[in-house]
View 1 (cartoon, rainbow, N blue to C red):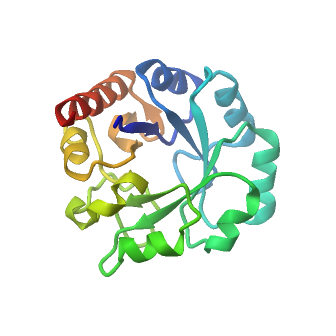
View 2: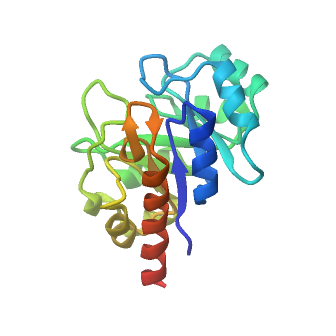
Length: 210
């Protein structure tokens, strides 16, 4: 099985282009104003227009109101919605799009229970927990907490970088991996070489597994 790659927190068309050329399966656009990787609709549209075919656009929200999400969906070719807050399953399912639900792996969280609760999600995105921060911490969590039976429904995030993603893929065998800060040279500014190195390491891990 090939591990898919999402490059999240894209803020510039040239970074989206670098991700696509390196072989990314998806890019993430962050519609959460407190984030340093937040994009407005005008910038998001410029990014999306420059993407080649077969690279998915993921729109990320954190406890956004219904109207904000609908405005983004009406303005952009969004393929998947990513909910990164405390959204309930019915709310996530109410937009007529495939969706991901992010789960912060704080102490006591049971991934199997969360998978059952969000059974309608295309996948669970498991991320590092830090109080008051919905994502993008740059820190990894203990990957052993992910049950093997969930691997095919997992997008693994949290502190992934070119120097550790191969081990993460070999250990977890997730459906996909998600990276943001680990391929940046500054907040919201991606590094094309780091993106290429990250995706190459994922491919090498897949080859070793096969």
